[in-house]
Image 1: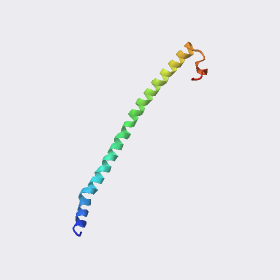
Image 2: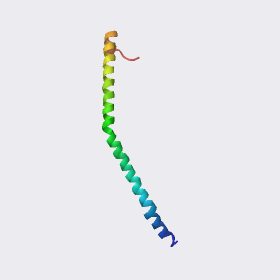
Image 3: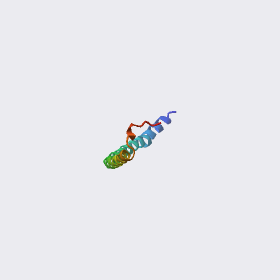
Image 4: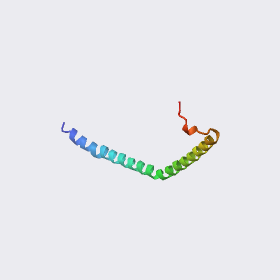
Length: 76
């Protein structure tokens, strides 16, 4: 039993502590990389949303022309 305490201390100092430090450092780096990519993703998503809005407006204009009163109909 007396031998286990020093072995456990050595294990904690040389194995567990470095593993924990490296683990959290890598998580912080991954979060920083993800945060750095956000402006590009936001710009892409904004462009896609604008495209979708233009397409929806075009579709509504076509429906207004082809099927007057379509907005007043209820889905059955």
